[in-house]
Length: 396
View 1 (spheres, helix red, strand yellow):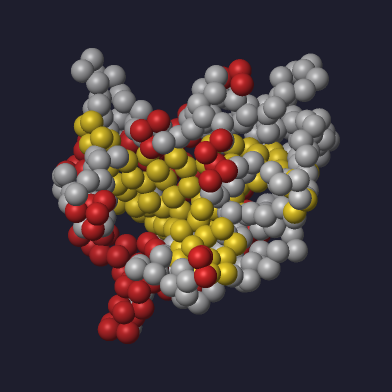
View 2 (cartoon, one colour):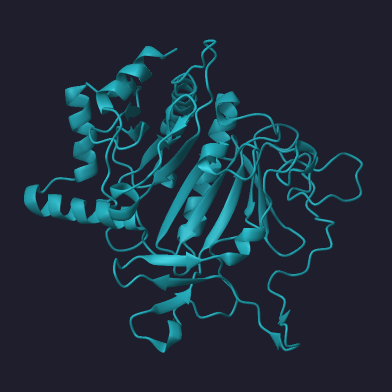
């Protein structure tokens, strides 16, 4: 990490979860002052032994995952997430900084202000439990068809701003650059954890997407398996290399640039386009011009260019739909970074961001029904060329 741009300071929360402040402002950037590092909450150690309903003390366990024999997909079972915080009031948001002068609050960040901060999720879908053999599986109901094993990954939260009412598009280029540094730092660290196969940095935005906390934030999942979409992309890339000798994701970007019918933004280092087979009502891919495997692989000038490119892209997306009075409608979206996997097939990957929205018209959502939910057979409600034309129309 470039020290002159960002200073990272690590600490532990009261229950043992890790937290890192990523500071780009003084006096924290120089280290003259440090954010609050102690967490005063009376939280128990998250890995402390648990007393069951039968009174027996047992070691802490994490979520499990089961293999679907019909598709070969791993399905994590995270029933404890049913009790996670849901759309709290602004004065009770656990992602806001601590209130100045308050002796205690149940927020996740001890400091009264911050630039960017990451921490382990309090309600993780994936969790590595100390001294647990992540490879020690079992059979559900003792049936060989139903293997299961610990969902031994890691889930982190990335808070983009201390301002509860802000959004990613409201940030400054400097702050977005700090977020990029945090993504890259955490991708490198999480990829090095034992048993991790893939790291996915993403943001969910809007109630329509299912967001439970309105505070501007994203998440990072370190997955102990390769996700179904990535598996499909790797199969396609391997077959393409066998057939042509080329690199599929590289050639996709090159073909979009040649056609230029769906390219909506082009800078020195980045290209944004609507994919030729876009399936969502609004969908954009953003890729570096240079072949880069993952976020840590981005050069300094590519990261700087990315910060302004992201702000331009999200500003356009927030103008894609307008209300009857002409006011822009903030777009609900999922924005996720596809990165090369950690192990086998890594050379087939190429970094790119996918932004998608379920909003197909003001007040109308695309619901996955019939063949889409039941058969994963997609039917688009529009065309990629129409999406691209609208995004060009609303350019700054």
